[in-house]
Image 1 (cartoon, rainbow, N blue to C red):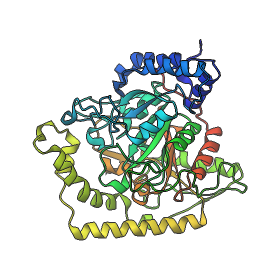
Image 2: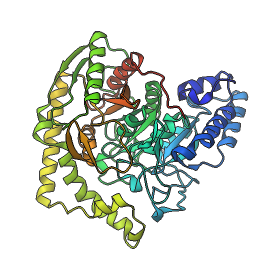
Image 3: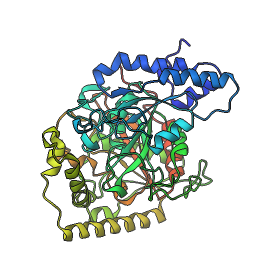
Length: 468
């Protein structure tokens, strides 16, 4: 084909391969060529998977022989380097794990392969997947393809940058508090953090605090997120939080027979939000109202009563810090800045920990009440668009805040386990993407995907890509 195959989404590539309009070898080679051309500037891909072209040739041969094939047959995908990949380096962004090669695939990786997808590469992350920027001592810093002087976010910043730059059509990543949705917003792609346990964490690392971690897909289109989610969800018999059958969905379905009830907010406990970000959320609300849905400005008292970021900080220090101490014991000289910062954080007292857990329960109750009245919540993804590298503080709408506060709009949905999606819907005055976040009731992924697909079709920034 003369068309640039790296411009197609995964669903489109699968159709091209299935209909014989492109071969898997052509598709995989095009993405390998793209990695060769631009990765030296971005540093999103940290390891190429051996055998991708051989797998592509086998995929083409199977199709030619009339074999029954999966929905992503012959399509390449990438994986955050905190997921085990059989026979392929999984180094977790740390010299402590340099050279580590797992024997088995993470459940999510195995499920992608079972659908016919071909592992192309592993992508960068912060050390131990713990920070809002993807930088570490082993594989270095990832740059944003829209502006190399800015961050692509963390902890899935390598995955987001690879997809935004056309090095991959589809990826798997994880989210503790911001790690799927924030990087997606920073680089102008889409990401879904499903309900807690919908996609097993088996083979993904780290696990503490386990109930806050979520696995999800990243892509350039909503239909790719929906496809990947359908392939990845469901119990695996190993992750005790993954218990709900994949076919169960409590949402409105792919084609609701009534208007969606949407609440939107840009404050209500979120802290300061950059004016351009707030304006983009309101624009998305206006578009949904114009499309015939019920849209109201709302507040959520539970977000104002118990600050989700502070609850998270008290909870995860109590659980993550001891786990990190065990990992780095004897290797303290190989730690990067942000892990050292974590280990230097004062311990959480048992009393504060219990109070945080009780606050999280109140937060869950507050969202349960909200979703009795509304189907969807529309809000910012991050308080500001993609920022310059290495910052530890930000000035947001005239207020100076700690960098960790960037996750204030996203962390409530990790603490409660609610599903949430990030997608681009705007552009800053200097050309950077702005995302919006959609959240819905537990196990209501269909509601999020339906509204996201509608917003995508009406988006003022559809099909915009970085120029490299």
